[in-house]
Image (cartoon, rainbow, N blue to C red; front, side, top):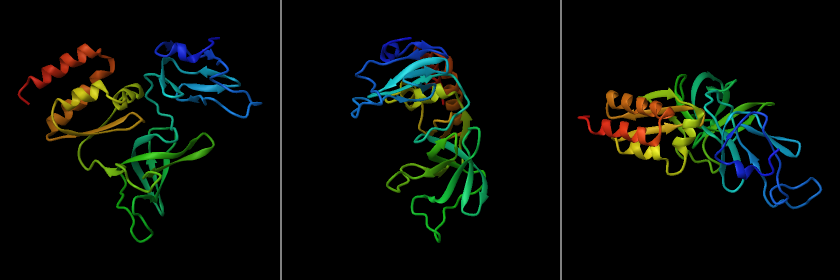
Length: 244
């Protein structure tokens, strides 16, 4: 058993690894004040007073106290607060069913859009892509998503993607794309103008000025999965040096 999870950040963990914490990191049930609440993300869970790793991957940390395992898994497990790309599959009364890539479909209310009322309903059709956020995501309840933030604003969410290309990548690559100051995203921006939407469920949508450029960006992003930074930059330079 390791004494501190922080000391293993950046290392590869295996299922079954167990971690305890020093007093400054975790508090017992008898204490009334907690100095730091440790939050377990994908791949980690509480096991009594310790934390158990149940996936294989690299341990990551986000200040102040969020930990998760960065793995190459493709099956998405819904998590409250995460933004995903969903596909509307059913339109029934006041709700829509949305495929989010998990084990079951999520529910999306017609009132979960900015400015939506009983008289002013959003124009959502079966097959549409929606960028949405989980408000309910646990094993005991049906997942629910919304297309607005806590202030009732769309904030970039809603129906999108009348054109463009939707494809899937690993959840690990998604986190690299969404990371602050992502090197991959900086390289993509140097290619040519495009629209890019990345969901935490491993779905990526891209649209460039032509079908050819759209396919190039999609193929480059998929190729980044197993490339080093140097290999990726070499490939991107080869593309920008062309006649596109």
